[in-house]
Every structure is written in structure tokens, then in C-alpha cells.
Amino acid sequence: MALPLNNRGRCIGALTVQSSQEAAFSLAISRFAVDEPISWPSPLQRRLYDEVQHYATRLEERVAERTAALAVVNKELEALPILSLTTCERRYAAWMALGQALLEDYAGQHDPQQAGISAGDYSSE
Picture 1: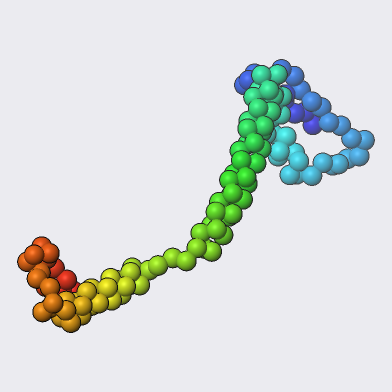
Picture 2: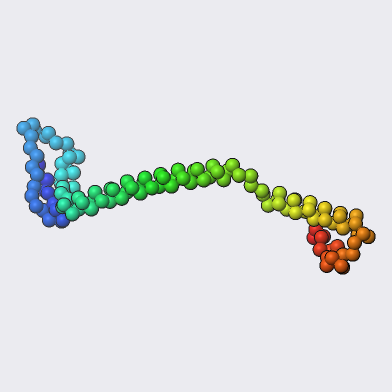
């Protein structure tokens, strides 16, 4: 059985495989030999392949580093007390109600016009 050796699309030789036994090679190997010619990489192709492998390895390392850093930041964020919008709205409404109650309780004791405010400035609407 002979396998063509290709380089850059050109046949540069052949690899022969022989056996002293009859029918030593399976049909699958025989078909592979016909369908898949062997190509030898040129020095440039080998160097480019090695560079791509190096960059892929470095990229995987950087992704792992950044993923680890992101996990640390996420843990820190999870530890922070976060106020929901609903909580903020409730606190705002409570302060507005307190302001309104103070205005109502002390309405006769100060002049809102003199202070430059009106009761409407503290309504919760």
C-alpha cells in the first residue's frame, strides 16, 4: 500500500507500507490511505502552529486569571448591604411623612412664607 506525501498541495513522495501477511491491512486503513494523503508541515507552518498554540495557552491563562479576579469582586459585592429600590422608596416616604407631621404639629409656631417653604413642599405625592 502506498500513501502520497504532500507539501503545500504538491506530492513530494510516497510512503509505502508492506506486510508479509496477506490482507494485513483492514479496509478502513486502505480507504484512509486513498482518501487522506499525508501532508508534512513546512518549517513556517510548524512555527505558526507553535505560535498559535502559545497564544491559545496564554489566552486561557488570562481568562482564568480574570475569572478568578471577577469571582473575588463578586464575593465583595455580595457582602455589601444593597438597598433595593423598594427600601429606598419606603425610607423616602417615611422622611416625607415625618416632615409633614412636623409641619402639622408646628404649623402655628413658625411662618412658612418667611422660611420660603410651603406645606405642599413636603407632601408625599
